[in-house]
Structures are given as structure tokens and as C-alpha cells.
Length: 282
Image 1: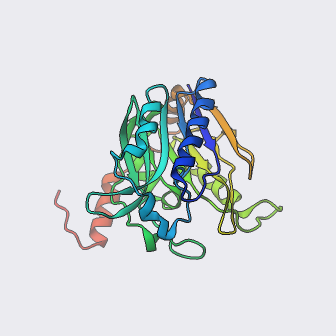
Image 2: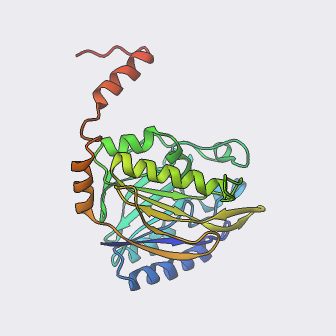
């Protein structure tokens, strides 16, 4: 089965223009025969929104999201937006649309507020890590910083996920040994580690373009449950990346490498509960 990543450059705060852009990328993905197209974090709004966040915020049933829902009658779509929850809080969110409606929303749990990042000043954190059924299999969504926390992919895999969608707005920073971009080296190592040791597909969808003098490096990739690179996009350029997802490969790798089968979530739960002073009865 084919899936696509739209490695695009959203315009900051220009939701109408970004919706038009989404339509173009969705059409390109459909033309390849892909069953799903994944967009980066905040693909409908841009990233460094600051005080613009409230202006572009949407409830899950906002009419501005209707074109995405309608397009999902032909191809599943995962796209990023600012969600205004019922209690009026703003969240960095990634939706999954299929069959004409929004099937799942993940709110970014870990909000980086250090260095060049200021998420925690403008957004509230999510408090759920739930799996859902996607066209690619049981899935979980980890938005950018979420993936840097070991607990997130672990909980998804322990909850039955076979694919982790990782939409990101990752800026290019630093230089790694050998002259490679430091951010790219770190992300690629992380993607491969999670994919191979949790025996899942990792679908890393990063954006490109510039905002507030920051360059986003792209390099989107799909890593298989054997740790192999299924497909990787160029750096700093827009690109539609298409990759094949083989569900049988997941089963083969889990039989060959049964780390997930032998995992002890009950033990993890008990140890963490004890450290938090919570009494667990047998």
C-alpha cells in the first residue's frame, strides 16, 4: 500500500492560502495511487504563530476544515491545525480525516519552551496518547517534540500501534560529525531506533520553508520495522514523498525480533506507580 508525505512550506497565518495548497498536494498524492497523505505539524497555519494562534484556531467541526473532510472521501488525510477546545484552550493538533469526516485528533503533549521554541507560552498541552485505526494500520500520532520523549512511541507500540505518524516543524540547527546537519542526524537516528526496536513504521513528515529567520530542513522519511529507509525526501526543498507500507513485514519482524512481545508494561506501570507514591494492589 502506498502512502505519501507532503513536504511543503505553509504560509504563516494564511489559512485560506494553506487550504488551497493542501488541495494541490492532495491531488498530487491521489495521482500516485497513495491511500493516505500526511502533512507536517501545523500545516494549515504555519508554526511561529505567537499572537496569531487565536485568529486561526478551529474547533474540530469548524467549517474551515470542511474542504479537508470532503477531500478525505477519496484519500485519507492527516494535517496539522490549531484546535480550540470546548474549554477555549488552544492546542497544536494533528487530525486524521477519512471517508469524509474527522476520525481522530491528537493534541501535542510535550510543548518545547526553550531556545528558539515558545510553544508553552501560546498553547496548552494535550493529555491523551490514544491509538486509532488508519488505512496504514493501528496508529499513533507524535507531533514533533512528542517523539523526543521515549514514553510516547513506547505507549503507542504497547497499545497495539504498527505505525507512528510523526508530523514535525523541525528547524535546521547545528553540524554533526562529518558535516551533516545536526538536526537531521539526530532525527534519523531516533526514527530508526524507534522503528527497529518497537517494530513499527515511523512516518516522519517535516516541513520546509522559512519563518522568523528560521529555516525548516525537511528530510521527511518513512522507516520500516526492520530499520530500513523505505523513502527519504530531499532537505530544504518541497517534495511529495511516496513510500510502500507492507503490513506483512511488521508481522515478520515481530516474529524475528520479539522485543515488543516480551515487553512488561505491567512491570513498568508498577515501578512508576511506586516511585510516584501510588499504591498498586495485585
